[in-house]
Length: 287
Image 1: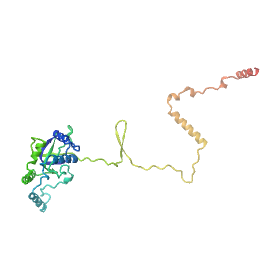
Image 2: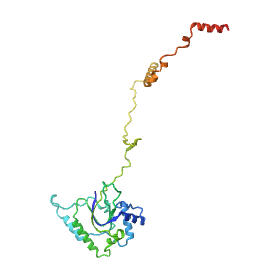
Image 3: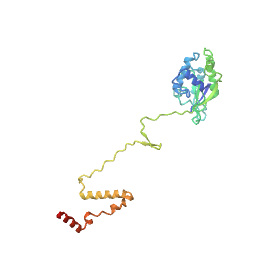
């Protein structure tokens, strides 16, 4: 959860969109200007539109840096007696705000992951001095560093450039110190070679399955020395009877209670008597 102490002003979201449209900045996202591509595109456009911007960011005077180095060169006291703030574990090149060290202007966004009412905040921040706060920071010391750097810059021609930039971007907005919290966590894309797959059923539920590549069980083989003989006629008859019984058990009740199949029909010779047969053949012989 990066937190920053910055000196700057608020840049309203509506003015950001107008600036992006008027300057035809295709690579800038007006609702999230802290991204690497968006911030680089906007800062490059600032340098192109406003020739009063200094070529280099505000530099802290060497006397202040030497004093800080001397304090670090002293023997380190016991852990319980060391009251200094440790340096940040995140280098500026990996920080989205501090990565643009070539520009004197820095862009910041505030973000709360629990806030779901709007897609973005109604404003962003434009700053000329930014400090990343990992644990804590001495606000008085940072303000003194900024004042010393501003006093050293009065000898140059770029005096009051930040106020001019404010008048170009957001007229009337107050310039001051702000603490900005950007709780945007890093989003890691899944690996392309992942073996996880998803089966989408008709109900819309997602069932993850994993390709385990299990070995197939080999088919059962006859033990050595014994040959497989073909089935005999009796074995075939028993198999056929078993199949008929299985099919009969699977038939519905109304087919099993069929009176026609349970009571066989009498043959023709049972219907005709012996006398009837004699009469039938005697007529054929007489004719």
